[in-house]
Length: 109
Image 1 (cartoon, rainbow, N blue to C red):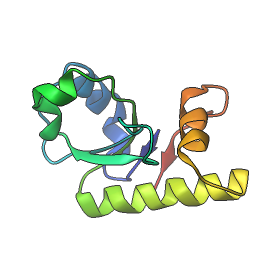
Image 2: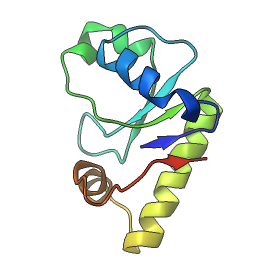
Image 3: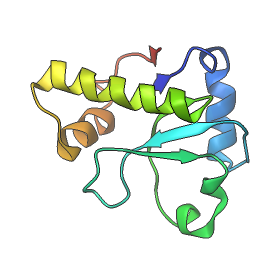
Image 4: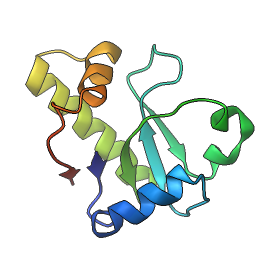
């Protein structure tokens, strides 16, 4: 999972609150795309309270304390995928985060 430096010390707390679908402000989640065509999506944790999101299986791949930091984390994820795979696509990103063997540690920025 990718985290901004502000959230890293409390990673487990934030993960538990997200799993319980608790409202956490300010927190932005970077997720694998719902539609499969995007590379990733950024949501405020407040958006995840809407029924539409609660009815879907969202895979959170990054957490940030502001929208700007979430955008920087998403850019870093893209750069990491390009350096690792020489390409980026929804399939590459999805495969990387769905395969636990490839994610051996957290990425803190």
